[in-house]
Length: 471
Image (cartoon, rainbow, N blue to C red; front, side):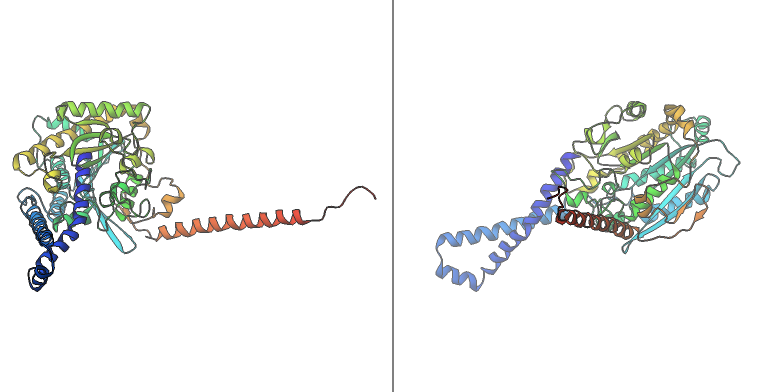
């Protein structure tokens, strides 16, 4: 992943040089007419050679780029991958066929003229029965980066298995039912649908949302810090933490659902990451041991030990600031928070983004979906056992948790759905502006107080000193 990012930076620099080569090309073509005739009269053989070299260089650059942009790009394989619209329609149809265990909710948000919506699918095996037993809650997010199409296909595959329309080999149905009885699962099949549409329109390297912000840099933990290799095209964190409607929605879902396990699913390599992303360490305490133990089991059973394991910041080769997984662990206090990287073609060109992040042949496509579906059902089985007492202590979710003033002013009250499917309509306000005005008010109050104290101090210094000794 680190190497891929460096290659893309070199690519951006080369693209910036292209206009200068194009100018040389135009100069070369301009000198082929009357301009060349004047040059032949007025110039030396050296200048003629330089002009010819400039024309040739421009010609090669243009034709080289043309070949790169057309012949070496792998297009989206429509035989393997759904369009964003078709995938969401198929998920809706799946929910419609299984109302006894699935519900579908759409949450919308808007900020400064930019709007987004996120679909949330909830699975509960005995949803329509009176089952008051505490549930183990799992929150999964797919498609946070638009170019990682394979992740949303994995979401569809998992939902199909949960609905028993597809099956995993070597999985006992009765044992599976016993496991799923304990669970309440929320899945976001496509977190960044606006960015996905940009990819489908032809920009296959786009990872950001519809207005150019990386949603996995827009969370508040260590937000905005830039490393030496910071790439604004790849890692734009936005104007403020939670400036984007997508991250606002995801935060509300996490706060209200209060999961025991969070997994953010990506592609680009094969890895099983735990916190932290913004520093080269893992957390202290029992939870760190529990997370690492689960990841090692997954690596053994489903990755054949080829997956990288550890903290995102310590394993991938670079630090990432403002990520969702760090926020889930530090702020939402999710006991087990992970980032999974499910596929990567390290041999692909940095320009060939679709091939770099997504399987392109039927065999690899199905292998990835089967292996990682099995990995998630292992999480469903082992997760409650790993947490043990922590599971029972945090077994009842609260819909309205206490939040900080920043979280409230960032738009805590937006349209959302409860775990029972009952929609709550609340106001969507421009809380970013209100928070700014509030801080300006505090700053001006401090300045006025400072000026007032300064005047008092100067007044005391200017007061005449009266001697207490009689003359």
